[in-house]
Amino acid sequence: MIFKTLLYSTIREAIEKKIVLAIFTLIGLVVFLMLLFINLDSVDGIQQMLSLGGDETYRENIIRFTSELLNQFTFLAVFFLLLIFSASYIPSMLEKGSIDVLLSKPVSRPKIIIAKFLSVVFLAFIILSFLILLIWIMVSARSGIWHFPFLTSILWFTLIFAILYSFQMFLGLVTQNTIISLAINLFILFPISAVLAVREQTIFTLVDSGFVKFIVDFLYYILPKAWDLREMCVNLILGYGVESYQPLITSVLFMFTVISLSVYYFSKKDY
Image (cartoon, rainbow, N blue to C red):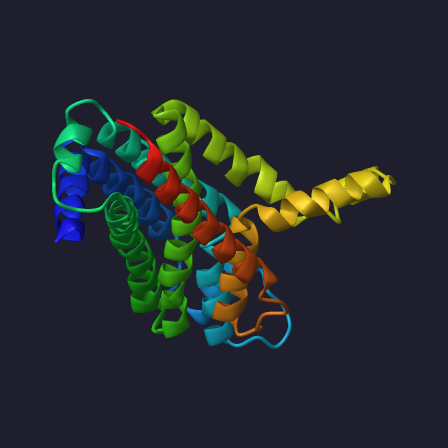
C-alpha cells in the first residue's frame, strides 16, 4: 500500500514539475534525429556506415551498430538526465509539512524509505524502457534484424540507476539539499568512476607509488562501477560473455549497504 502511495506521489511530482515530459521529449528527439540520417536500406549502406571490414555479416553489423548506440556519450547523457530528474525527491519529501504527513501514517520508517527508493527506480525503469524500445524498434524495423538480447539493456541500465540512486538517496537524507546531493553523485559518475574504470591505462601509467595505487584500487572496489556495468551489458549483447562479475557483485553490495545506511539514518532522525 505504501509503495502505491509513494509511487503515485512520485509520478505526480514528476508530472507537476514537467520532468517526465521533458525527459521523454529530449530522449525522443535525440533518438529520432540520430536515426533519421541512418541509411539502413541496404547491406552496402550499413557496411559503409559502420566502416567494418572482414567477414562480418549484415546481421552482425546491425547488432554491433545497435550496441554502439549505448556508447559512453549516450550512457552519460541518459544518466545525467535521470539523476537530475530524481535528485529532488528525497529533499522534497523531507520538507516541513510533507514529512509530517508521511510520518503520521501507520507505516514504519524503513518501509517508507524502501518504498520511496523502489518508486523512483520504477519510474526510471519506465523511462529507460521507452528509450531502449524506441531505439530497438526503429533500428530493427528498418534493418529487418530483431536482436532481442538488446532489450536486456533495460534491466542493466535500471540496475545501474538503482545503484547510483541509492547513494543519491542517502546524500539527500543527510544533506536535505538537492543541489549538493546531485553534484556529489554526478561527480562519482563522472569523472571518478569513469577514470577508475580505466585506472590501469591512465592513473597507473603516471604514478609508480604502490601506496597511491593501493588507494586508487581501494576507491575502485568500494565505489559503484557504472562504466564497468555498461561494458558488461554491451559485451553480453554482442555475445562476448563476461570475464568477471566482480563489478556487478561489488556494485550491488554497495547499493545494499547504502540503502541500509539510509534506512538506519531515516529511522533515527528526528524530524
